[in-house]
Structures are given as C-alpha cells and as structure tokens.
Image (cartoon, rainbow, N blue to C red):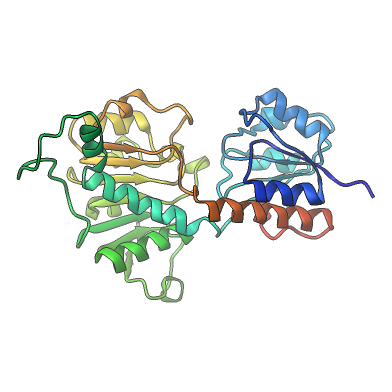
Length: 323
C-alpha cells in the first residue's frame, strides 16, 4: 500500500524525523531554509500532508492552489495564527496543532524573562562580557524584585495558569487576570487569582504583565499605545505569546519616554526581524523565540504531530484538530 507523502518545512528533532519516516514517505528540508511562498505551494501540490511551523506563513494567497494534493496541515506548535484557517478549510485542508506539551517550558521562560528584566540580568551580562564591570557597589544595576508583587495575566489558558502557579507559589505574587470566558474555582484549582473584566483593569494593577493569548485576528495589537499608557510606569511587559499581540512601535515609544520600566520579549511582529528600536534599548530582554526550546518539549511536540497524522490517514478525527 502506498504510504502518504508528507513534507516537513523545517528540520525537526532526529527522533521525530525517524518516527515520521518509518510510517510515511517523508521529505525533509535538509538545509533547514525557510520555505518561500512558491515552495509552500509546490508542497501543497505534491504532498498529502504539509507539516508547517510558526516560520511558515500560510495565508489565503499561498493556500490558493488549484487542486492541491495536500489534505492536512499538521502544525508543529500550539499557535496557528500563521495559518489562515478559514482559507485552509475552504481548500479542504484539515489543520491540527500540538497543545499541552509545551505549557511548562513556555511558562518557565515567561518567569525567566520576568527575572531577567526585573533584575537587569541582560544589562549586567553585557557589561561584564564587555569588560566594563568595575566591582560591587551599592548603586550598581539596582533592579526590582518579583516577590510580593502583582502579576497581571492576559489569557488564562494552560500556559497562563502555569505561569500564575509559578508566580504565586514560587514568588508569593498576587495574581490578577483577564480572560475571554469566566473561570470558576474548579478551573483555577488551588490558584488564588482574581479575574477582572477588562484588559485595562489588569494593566492598571499589575507590576508585571504577562501575555498568554492567541495571536492574529482581534488580538493583533491588543497591547497598543492606549493600553501601554494604562500600565504603571514601574511595570514590565512580558510576551511569550505571539509577536503581533503587541504594537512594537508603540512599545518602543513608551520605553523611550520612560512610561514603562522594561519589557521581556520572546516573540516579534515580523520574526525573525526585530524592531531596531528594541535592539537599542538596555531595559529590554530579547530572546529568539525559545518558549518551547527544550529537548523534551520539542520531541513531544513532534510526536503529537505523528499522532495527528496517524489518526487522519487512518480515517479518524485527529486528536488536535482545530479546523
């Protein structure tokens, strides 16, 4: 029996590539280059499944392929705002993602960013590596502590709750949050957190604001100039969600004007390009989209894709179908 043809748009962990190759006629992106729109369209014409990542923009134009062979986009990642889901559905494509398996690692990284920007760790390392450190002194790189502060979370899904648990139980932080739906005690478990009605209500109270909402659609520039102005001037903004949730130009202007204490970012509007204004600021910690970047998590994500593909080609509904 002919095996389904699948294409990986980027290199994946060896263990996952071997698992896919054992079950499917697998094409690898051997030099790991970002695929162009034309290459993505060719993949849709020639393969039964395309396995994209966040670095692949599958918008309506790319998906407008006459008589595509592909029947499923098995996305490697929980977020799928880089895929036009409506256009995919119209083209007869199933879309899946990989929820759950990257929750803890992304939550860990959000706390990493909070600590780094609050304690000015990035500034300190740059100073030391450049040979500019002249020894301990009482006024040197004085930052802010996390312990006992208020954490505001926008988007209280799996990752938001994992961040809140770490902040509350690890640092004694008070947690307030905004979420599209109302969360009850059964959903929050042992977490003591107060749900507020509006994003602005959270921003006004929080010393740290951590974003954990989906990107794209109505959430594009959710944090814009007016909402940045609603934050306290000593507060820090943390984004491990999606880059387009934040208006980067407005963020740069707020930081330059001293209306915000700092920011810790792992995602950007135009990845892999980063706003030059952010690069020039000392009170910003910038990481290259490392939220899920642990060996355990990247393998688990890939194996979740394997499960989705097996179910799909067996004629069953994939466990992580989103469209």
